[in-house]
Length: 311
Image: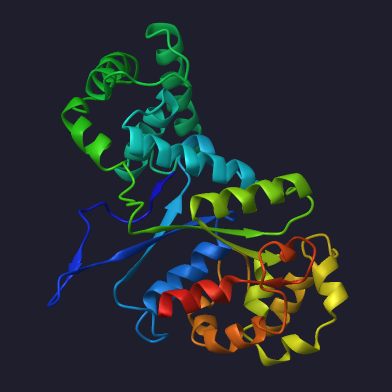
């Protein structure tokens, strides 16, 4: 996992030189939540987010693409934070850094077959040439990168990558500070892929590590529905069950499309919704907001995250 925006030293705000607090947002979904919080970031001043708050989306690296189970996502985030603290990373983490570099600098050009080919080649280099597993820790990052790129250059005709090794390493490390910042896990209560035991584990781990966990039961679309006055008129039992109403859609998404006809999970007017976030926060208070009780009860506590960032 990595930060979406460009990497830089921690910024300061003049004139009082106060350090910004970063909220690292780790999403279960790939698009819907990311689109919403991008709008939150755009409208920070309009919705009274504290100017000392910086919103940092955390996105998946190559080997994590397609993950949706919150336990799996949380465990990887914990691993990344532990690697940051210890300074020791696994070969899988290093290979993800390399793939992120290839993506960012246009080497892959959003070509999935090419990306898969590079990933397979990188795995083979580690396992067959370096004789290490992806779970093993890297003894020397600079040396490991040089060895990998020397072999990759021969097999893939990539030139001049070695000179970018410091950039690959430095730009891939999370700028998270445990003393200042906050990790926020934003997930759905999806009973189909998020078991009861996994739910308890995720809530407990977040509590023990002082991470924020923000859950919507049944799904993030219900939080989006709270931006409308008439959400209170919807059947709570139907909302909680969220049954399929068509081959493509469940109840919550169908109700959202009635209010936003052009809505899709990957494209919608999030700016318009976020402008009504105070209404959503008020509506949220009518439902469950406790992360433990949200396991079996309709509601959300995403509004509590917004409110916290406003303080």
